[in-house]
Image 1 (cartoon, helix red, strand yellow):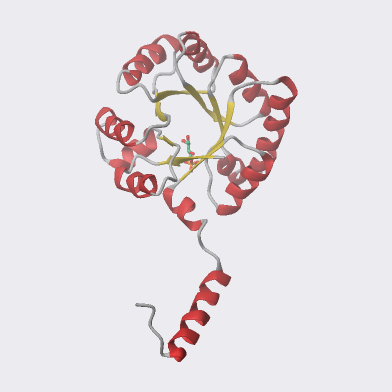
Image 2 (cartoon, helix red, strand yellow):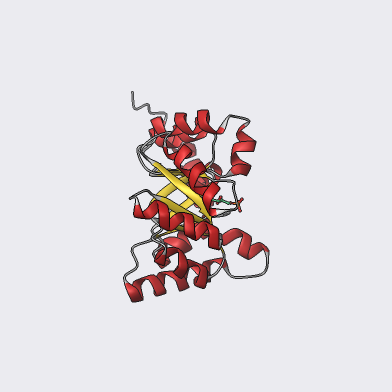
Length: 217
Ligand code: E4P
């Protein structure tokens, strides 16, 4: 399973990247706003740090302007994945980019039907939003499972990039199902290391070690 980090916070990406935990990065307009940085500048910095795909999102809603924005974003670095929304115009732009051999991440996917269209349009990645479905009383993890089954049924090559990940359980569920990639905020990735029994066990070991009066060096 590949780990993408869902942020435009350069320091947070660097910390995880130094540990080999980063296979790519996803950004969106809200994350760019949160970073307080210029989109081109911050995306260039991220692309220089991370060797895997870095998703940068277009903001136009018509295919023609999406294509010109996508080409401008692709100029930033060779590892840009152009992110387009899962609309008919987004799929049109996706097809145009894919035909030129460019990486495309089709985002805002909320149904298996949409995911089929993204694959047919040649997307490198489709991003189903697990957390936002859960927020609206749908089953986000079930959608990942459905897309996995459908893509495997037909040998679609588009990678399932599980997005809107809110918890460690989302990540392990996605791994169990066979999502190709998850993108999660840095805090959720770091929370994967936490376990109450690890903390309790460590506390006991250190207490007992103190009683031995020994030192290792
Ligand atoms: C990733 O590509 C998405 O933009 C992101 O995962 C959305 O997450 P959110 O629902 O927490 O905003």
